[in-house]
Length: 164
Image (cartoon, rainbow, N blue to C red; front, side):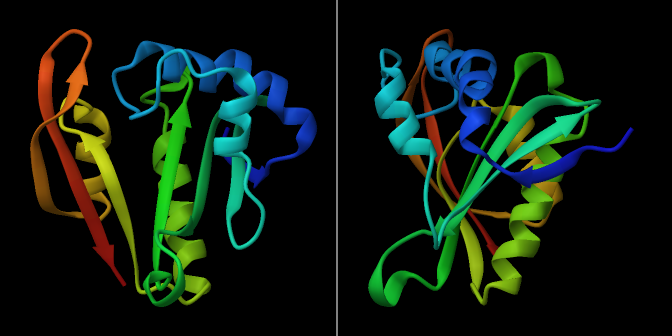
């Protein structure tokens, strides 16, 4: 069965928090968020209103991932989009992340953005880096030792960009 993407609804939050967002944040190995971030702060960080778009990914009726896309900067810098994605551990490798990123790229292009930039991709997040490169993102810079991975220690923090 194919991954279905739909706009996030308020009633999705408990599942997203319990099964996806909290575990991803607590792991501390991919996101530049405090591992102790509380639910209220996480919700404020993830739920966005226009011009942002927040979606959930479902497979067989289960929410397995989420993504958000919107302006990377404000004012004159708002012509480049930013995207963020989280996929539950059990769903990795099943096409959920790919579906989220492809949808984000299509949406951003349709909205008139000139490209999509990822500001902070831990180089240790090899699956994500591989996926992003496969989808046409260029690695435009790396901040050496910019991310403290809990198992690998200091690793680079990539800036990646997809031009339309």
